[in-house]
Length: 78
Image (cartoon, rainbow, N blue to C red; front, side, top):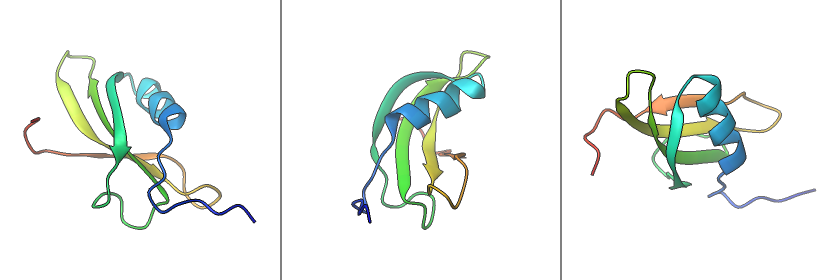
């Protein structure tokens, strides 16, 4: 059985998920321990939407259990 650390990120899936929703990745970050509940992969991102506005949040999923989803963070970018 493959054992993954609880802080796993997936840059390739994050980029593909963002691009499928017409978001242009600017920065793919690390793990967010406070995002996405119990999903195994939680990868932070900053992207540009179709209107040119910067957005940020997490792309989350657990292989075999859930498909990728996005949680947007409404706090100001730092």
